[in-house]
Image 1 (tube, rainbow, N blue to C red):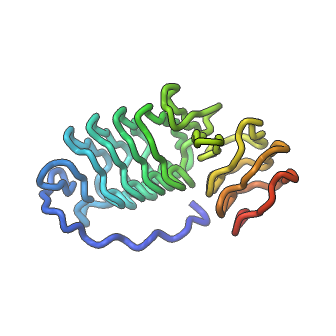
Image 2: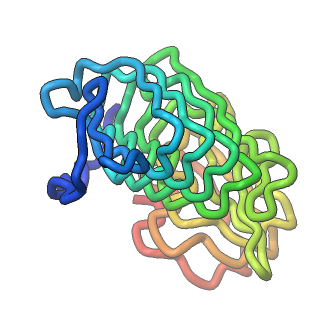
Image 3: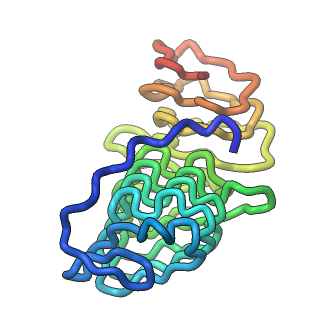
Length: 239
């Protein structure tokens, strides 16, 4: 957990009319998880989100440090930004088919305790994954379902299919000293190697982009050779 950046300011209390069930604030129409009762944030360890919920609001389980397990419903469509930010103990969850959006930093810092290693699958229904969604976590392998039209994976590394290029989205692999970017991957996504442990990254001679900013931020990379095809080093690329 060293070098973890400070959280964004907590969002203001949701104006949604809600009730509390099992210490969880749920909108009265039953479609949104708003958050956790303040006095229980560090007490809950397992959560079953009921069927009918379509959205987990941003920061809903933010810093629930002792949360170990979450069961998602088949009705879930959106996991909001920082929804499980720094849930260090979270190690048991399966993303349900039907999920469409995983917003920025949704699982940032999850499973980030010694001895916890988590593999996850991206359902075929997922259309958008925000920056840092899985950064600084104990997640090792991210596997996209083969029939997902927007994302694909190779050996546990997640990529996105754009209209004219394939972009490396999230590298979280543990225990690798060297990683070679495949020749058909044309760009690295912003923050795509954030906090990773790999020491050497080998880029091919036609790589176009290193992302918009902070591509290797907080990583332990010691060596990378930049090909002549890279015309710009983004801000704080190696910060």
